[in-house]
Length: 220
Image 1 (cartoon, rainbow, N blue to C red):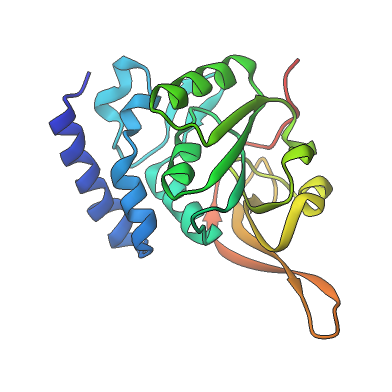
Image 2 (cartoon, one colour):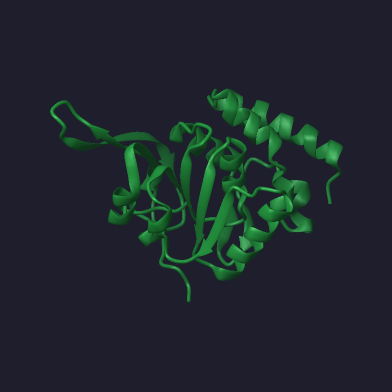
């Protein structure tokens, strides 16, 4: 276990050393990272390592992402209060909680049923009513909740799934690792834009090299 006072100090150190020092400058994102108790999303035996500068195993071949990666994704999504966010790869629920702390309504999809149940319980215990969690195949998105202002993905794919493009609002942003799911990928921001003359296009911006697990279909 970790005491609340110790966790608070660890969050402040994490923000200063892991985030601000690496270029995370969005004040709202930094505040959200200070607010969300990362230790609440981990088994008790891992709570003391909650603010370490690396991902942590949460079982089923999944991890809770490194704090910097969560903050980097949130900053790249350019989230605003009231945005509708599709969170792909719920995992522990930590990233969804950060998006909710930014004032967003969040729909989160997890391929492993037991992790989806556990994350939903954790989010509910923290009073985060603006997060809905579903067990399913992220490739199909969440059509009945679309359109989304932003889609954040915690797994690598060679391209943006077509369903996500269909479910993204005009001006919406997708941040995901693009490239070989078994190698090094590029964290990218894909924005749906309307060009002069009314033509629609997709702007792709490479952000930085990353290595994520592959985006897989949901388990039965």
